[in-house]
Length: 414
Image 1 (cartoon, rainbow, N blue to C red):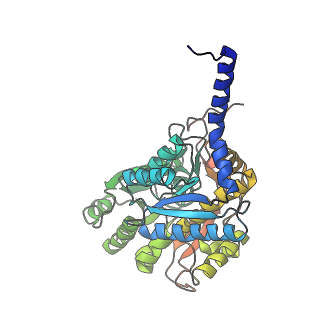
Image 2 (image 1 turned 90 degrees about the vertical axis):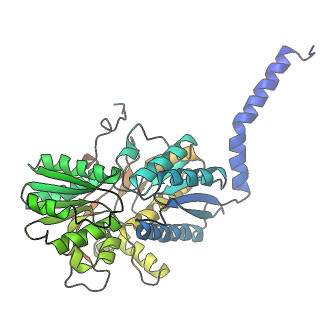
Image 3 (image 1 turned 135 degrees about the vertical axis):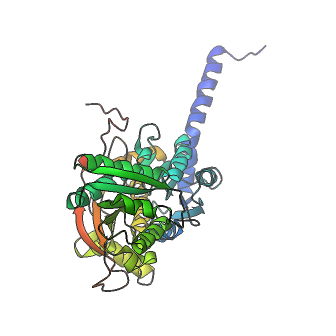
């Protein structure tokens, strides 16, 4: 029989519980005092259909880390970027993210280049209370069912992007629309965004023709599109799919009598596809380097990128890699901590202009409120190989262009 008094046993239990509760904090303090680097996991599809965009994300992310480290880091702690290939596969993305958290002990995760992979990455991070800042388009990631205190979305979302492109182009065309849609979340969400904006403008959907991700040959779809005689053809696809469909639609003569637009007119796709294939195609983007004549932060970002990479200019998704990393690192400085909760609070309060004008995260869902750039591809009067777009308009950052917090499932108190 134990001779320990009840009061003493109670004190021992309280002390043990306090020690257990404090252990994560003590561990983090020990990490900080030892000067251990702040680690950011960066899962992106280095192989697959979006590899060109992913490579640019990495280059710009490395630039953000280098810049922060040269400025002294956080209390002497430098940042280390751990890049992993998610192979554009949700299962692979989840596995790599789990390894980054449990094996490599990352403090934060930034990355993704797919609506599907970012949801799997977010699920892993959310369950382990690790901040994830997504740099790929998705509507679902901000919805209450997938969201958490640790979920942030640096990129545009399909509702905002498609809505801006629709508001600019639909009033300039006839009413009949055909969608050529990559059959996964990105394509579906973009179509929904166009249709929602188009309904208010009297647009009529003639067809939503879906194709598998990674389609090389669009010849089976083009005769049907031509027979429908649409006023507008919307290419709701991405990366190599956008390059291939734009080339083949141009060769097939679809542009005769039909305006072709796309929600995200990629800089990398335009370079890969060439001037002829993309001539006259319009769309949206989060960033175009040519904005530097009007936006000082764009000029500053471009100059740093040029210096680091032999005169190259950053792409739209490259810029997101830069901003996604820089926002998290700035929040570390503002919070004076590398722990998830204080950094999350600091991110919620962050107002920033890293490369394109003012941005901030909406409190209810952590979506970055930002401008949408409307561009159109050109083939004449180019100053150099990178001078590929005319900036047609910039829709300013405005929370009213997002779906409401209530619609997203977030209950906001008055």
